[in-house]
Image (cartoon, rainbow, N blue to C red):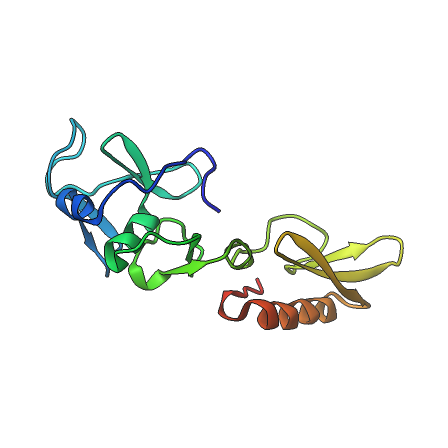
Length: 173
């Protein structure tokens, strides 16, 4: 998920982007073509890592997320919604690692949050029934997939539903 503190209008043109930055689609790294301020020198890697792992770049007093810039740089179009990092590494902006996604797809391609009673994503302990419950979220709505005697069976139900609903965006772990 992109940081809420970074909000901008897509006012940057493709010509301006390519005038000030070069982008290596194999490495995902942007470099300055011109010096815009006292910080970035010509040829130097552009951007800084945000505290949530994303790379952001300041161009003409506006802050941009590097993965969105990479998409724009390569396709000539601003993304309609989210840009997902296939490998969940928020600073890996290689073009092959990026893909457009809806909010639900982007959220599905996350690793299991630390903690919780279960070692599996989408599985929790249902105290009242004393069984493992499997749930998945789609479009902001929680969908109950059932109660199971073992964590493994609950997780298998989660994996089936995730693959059915999200295809290549599904992440089991």
